Image 1: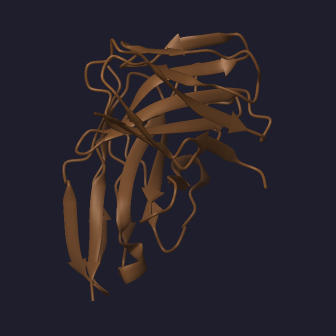
Image 2: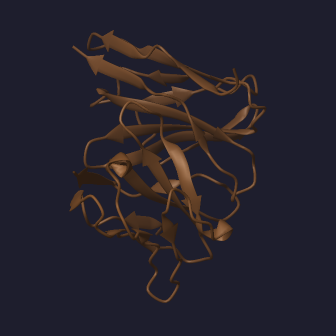
Amino acid sequence: AQRVTQPEKLLSVFKGAPVELKCNYSYSGSPELFWYVQYSRQRLQLLLRHISRESIKGFTADLNKGETSFHLKKPFAQEEDSAMYYCALTGGATNKLIFGTGTLLAVQP
Amino acid sequence: DGGITQSPKYLFRKEGQNVTLSCEQNLNHDAMYWYRQDPGQGLRLIYYSQIVNDFQKGDIAEGYSVSREKKESFPLTVTSAQKNPTAFYLCASSWSDPSDTIYFGEGSWLTVV
């Protein structure tokens, strides 16, 4: 069965500290992995996807097929990074997204 | 202004009543989706449609119904059969390719009183 697991409901760090939001998945084929972010009072939006191999707002995520993980990382957290982060996957013939339960990142000053 | 528009933003409903949430997009996207967002449970897929006049059940379709008569519109009806309808509902759309970005509306808060 397709599943996305985000083990941390809340991650609190201080400004300037490294951040790693964990995401593990189970999927029988070759999935597409994404990170979506929801800032306060804003709509859910795409942060990055694994096929682009890009860095957005200082965040990166590497797909590790051996560990079935897609952790989101940033070397130095900023207060404006505080938001809800969702890991998601899609695959097969449809592009319906399967979401994890989300991790709330709180960056303290 | 292009994008996805959901209405109403806030809605109160009495138990036993059906309610319809509107979702319109002017992005010319083929696919549209309805998700439900509950605290601690993330987003769960209710229904999705990849093409006009066709839609499929998601993971939690019971108590909901949809229609896709026009490409730009994908209304969701929350029926009285839905046992826990109070939630935040998100509509989304995308192109058909599985790797394409999915764009979300601002959401609709439904409260059953």
